[in-house]
Amino acid sequence: MMEKLKVGIIGTGNISGIYLQNGKRFDSMEIVACADIDVERAKAKAAEFGIRGCSVEELLTDPEIRLVINLTIPAAHASVCLQALEAGKHVYVEKPLAVTREEGRQVLELAERKGLLVGSSPDTFLGAGIQTSVKLIEDGWIGTPIGATAFMVGGGHESWHPAPEFYYQAGGGPMFDMGPYYLTALIAMLGPISRVTGSTRISYPERTITSQPKFGQKVKVEVPTHIAGIMDFASGPIGTILTSFDVKGGSTLPRIEVYGSQGTLQVPDPNTFGGPVSIWRAGAKEWTAIPLTHGKAENARGVGAADMAKAILTGRNHRANGQMAYHVLEAMHGFHDASEQGAHYTMHSTCEKPAPLPLGLPDFSVD
Image (cartoon, rainbow, N blue to C red; front, side, top):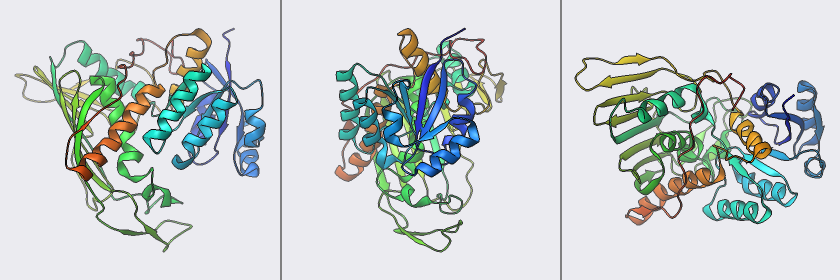
């Protein structure tokens, strides 16, 4: 029987449910415990999924647990990662890797000193939609990639999220909330970024919560909520990205398109695992729908951690790794820096384009 890596989760908020649900299905890891600063909340979540609920300290001192999945709020990402690494655990963290570049570097440097691995979401690029898109590009269906566009526009989270304040604080905003999905997908298809520029603004300095239970409360906006950026990819293409919480009407913009010398690829929403993939080849008169070449078309949240667990067990590289997450973090800050300084921002980091998943895998396998 295949060995499964023992895993613990820190942070039992909204996102933890899908990790715990899927954690029972992946063949490379077993989630055995969850912890939270609110121990009673951790125990309630644990009881729901038939695992052990405990304090953060108890989880970090458990010798059985080798990998910690960090699902805390962005402001706590770096500190919890550092705690886990100091305790001798590998760590996989929800996006973004950290709030600041300095914190991100601290996490990666400590992991290297300790001989431990760091991973980070998003892992949606391992789903059927993006993996199909990666294969189409690598197989030459659109020729040589020339450019790409990525759009994520909406009205913000105060209309539906039960506690939307942190989306408008440091580490939040549309770029840090949703940008990782789009940038990671672009890197998976086109490789690392060499230079960025951008313009940003705060359109509404104050937001009113219209969701429950905080209906009517005011939120001060501390981060840009409309960001337009340009990316020069090291491999040659030029990309455009727009992320906004300020669009109060609808939008018909595509999520992602990649333009090549022989056609255009329409890529599905990178916040999902499946979705439609279409190509408009040079000389054609319309879009052609492309069947998905890979599995994991449904919600496979946690596949990045499962892939990392397999890497720990076997010694191979993992795909949703800390170097790529840091590269995404630096690019997101680069858009903001460029806007403030009125200049291009040259990237200091790079990363490897993640290896595509093999064809024909079952939905909850990574090898």
